[in-house]
Image 1 (spheres, helix red, strand yellow):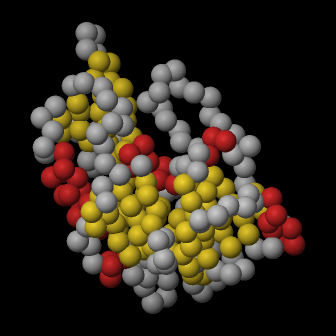
Image 2: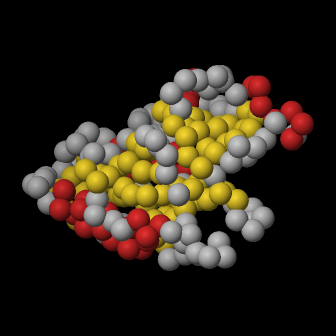
Length: 226
């Protein structure tokens, strides 16, 4: 594979929006290597760090924004530990929902609670699925009026914008005479390292260039990844 890929591989994960009824057919996507990767302009770049020959590539996460406003998170909470066993940030499409190191998660959660406190049609909801921040709303709105999140990585304009359908999970809730919905933050706290999961990677083209130790990315409609 290495002789064909020249150290480069790419993927683009489509949005799996279970809120849509009926649930659409899951589109196909492809893992591409080398010259088969589509040529694109304007991709953001951030360094990839391979530590002690571990099977993971680390990214230098510097901060997080909510609806375009940078949160007061000390970049040191994302720092990689000396031997690479703790801290740092990886990107992993085998992890469904992102895990944020706990100090950063708690700040994000608090800011979201402040944001949603202004909406009178919302009430806190205790999820049975392990999510920490969920709300129920009386009128179904899908992903409308939900905020976006941006992950800021090392590099010029290396900002990964995650739209509301990548930040939250929205679920229908049917009763005998009413139709409500609830939504949950599709991220959980972590105590070892931060992980950018598959849900937050949707509709982004990622190109791993292991030869030059960098990751490139750009927004893309991945259902068209034919």
